[in-house]
Image (cartoon, rainbow, N blue to C red; front, top):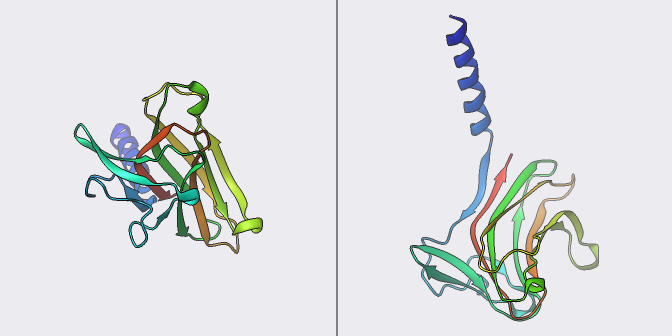
Length: 172
């Protein structure tokens, strides 16, 4: 009887914890056509600051988005989120280049615009091997009285392509 009660409590706990997460945005690129530009006006509403281009490509049986190679590549997505709520941003990244110092990728979560922009959270990949996929995760809380939040991927050095997959934002 005690085992059944304990199992019931565990099932109830895990089922309520799974239900409490709400997917806000989920993009794995599989439904997009090869050649789709993420940053094209009227498209998926990503921004590519500094004229960054991100294009969907087919790689084996998987579709991914890959950046251009110019210096200062950005990919920005803005969301209207609930003030005071907790979120988790997950995205898989890969950098292809032969020079190790060119393979850092920065991730930041901000609110506000221009000089009034403030970082909520940030993370940087380590000097990873070329062509190796990494899963990246940033947990953050939206400040009170703020709703517009930007998720930013940035790579500085010229000559390195960044690829992304499994772009996901979850409300915790």
